[in-house]
Amino acid sequence: MLRRALRLRLGPCLSGRGLGTYRGGSTLDWDGKVSKIKKKFQSIFPGGAWSPLYDTSHLPPERSDVVIVGGGVLGLSVAYWLKRLEKQQGAIQVLVVERDHTYARASTVLSVGGIRQQFSLPENVQLSLFSAEFLRNINEYLAVVDDPPLDLQFNPSGYLLLASEEGAAIMERNVKMQRQEGAKVCLMSPEQLQKKFPWINTEGVALASYGFISSSSHMETASGEQVTLKRIHEVHVKMDHSQEFQPVECAIVVNAAGAWSGQIAELAGVGTGPPGTMQGTKLPVEPRKRYVYLWHCPQGPGLEAPLVADPSGAYFRREGLGNSYLGSCSPTEEEEPDPGNLEVDYDFFQEKVWPRLAQRVPAFETLKVRSAWAGYYDYNTFDQNGVVGPHPLVINMYFATGFSGHGLQQAPAVGRAVAEMMLEGHFQTINLSPFLFGRFYFGEKAQEHCIL
Image (tube, rainbow, N blue to C red):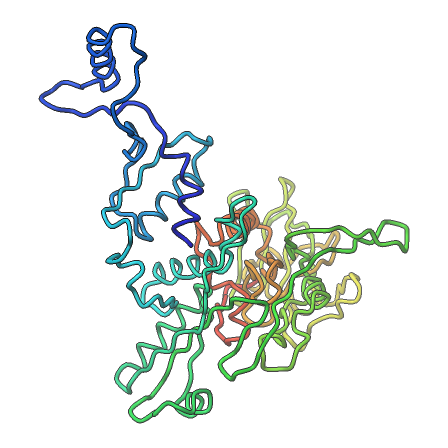
């Protein structure tokens, strides 16, 4: 069925005129030779209409931009993507040549047909993840107008790799990397393995890696629990100065709500399931109030001063040309102010910020605070790092949040990464897999220690 669909899609690509072959330093124009032959026959049979002596429809085209030798799944995949990605429809002519037209001896149909995500190289994990997504959504790629939907009989039963005591550490490292790449893989102890698969003999097994691929709206976890994949169909937008909400149908929702992104995620059902499950894993982003103080100090550092971050947590930078400075420091967990308002605590500067500044820059002993304000960090309580990419269960919600104070400076790159993930299905320029949502469930921190 896959071959049939590809043939139907790629059929028009097999047309072409004229095949140039290079021999002995000259190019033979096949059209020209045919013209000469036609003239000879016409001279022999004057007045007779020209018609070919035999049917040539079974022959390959006379010219093609690309010839792919081998019509198995790899060759057909190359042909498909060449046509799919061409800038102008019909711009590339593709010819696929396969010697075994029955595919009776082809590796494609004789293989075991398994799909796994458990590899030691991230590139292989990425290749398998996309290929599984392609097969799972085959009709988005290969459906033919007016034909019934394709049915590949895709049966994603998962992949279970077993490791002895010797290989357990390597398996752990590999699984960590696989999860970072977005693979749905979990580690299982011999006890968990026996419970999940009572038919297996766990003697000599120290650890197992279980990879699973969802083919429907349900997914099964390592413990056998079924989870439901969700999709957001519309967003209700509250209108200004009104109690009315305007529904907006959409295909994708990007949660870039900053300090409030945790609440937005919860509205979409993120983290509302049982604790300890993927459904119950919340987006750990909350508002944290931070103060910024503006002060003047005539004897302060000059124009060459960079932004200075002190080991004590205090920081400052110059603001303009008039010996003015901006700065502050983050409070401890015990000192965290109420995020319910944006009122400024000037005592915090007097007691916590100023002494540290003056200790590092003695000229700041004479500074005078001119103004101050408060704002919010979209604070990731898990590892103080960003959350980028799709949610594993709410499949059309993407995140761009949780940067805990460094979102502004990284916004251009983050926006590009999210767009790549939405349009291409993976990160292309910078691999941000460690920032995926799944790390919260698996407990794998992408810890950022340089937080101001």
